[in-house]
Image 1 (cartoon, rainbow, N blue to C red):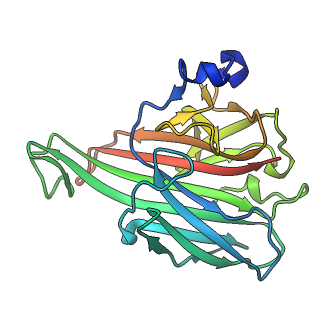
Image 2: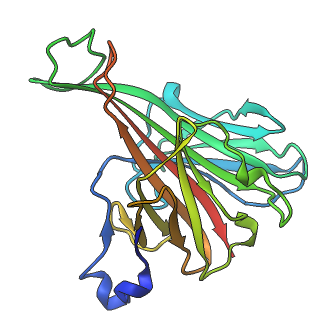
Image 3: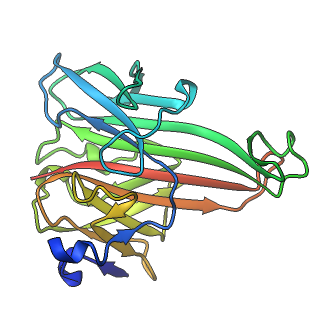
Length: 260
């Protein structure tokens, strides 16, 4: 496993201009971020949905029909009603905290089918565009934990997203400077992939991350959380299994964390 922490690359204010970790994929990331990571039962919490290249700033409002947020608690998944904010290019929704117990704020950008045609990219499947060069389905996921305590185990249980980031240390106990094991599940099974991580206001540049890790021989990567703040860990996976409708399935997942 190969990791590139900030310390190794000696990032500083002057060095940022010379070297930044930039993801090769320039599509918008899908992030559902809570207004707080701890709230008593009955309190209102705002969920903000970003479609963005920069963290955290809205850049695009996707179709309402494919933009979803949920509260996952006690085995139940409850939808959060979302409203578009055209000025800020975000969705927001208010959720009622179900109890003092920990729960998950989950998000999904449902699959969109994109066909590469001579006339450009078009929405549709292989059936709609039989002569397309490539037809992809792109789906995105996000999750964050709220009300985690030191003895809770909600964080260790998958919510069931097709691509899901599983942190292998209780997020409530993660402190600045910790190096933490991370796995990525695809269809419920660990895969080897690349991990990107960054924190709020690290950089205003598009798709620029503070940390990169590549799983080589192992299906576990390690992310070093170099400072306190709101972090995201990001992964993606491509499945080239063809169906009648698509040639390729691409999934992206984000985990939002509060690092003390």
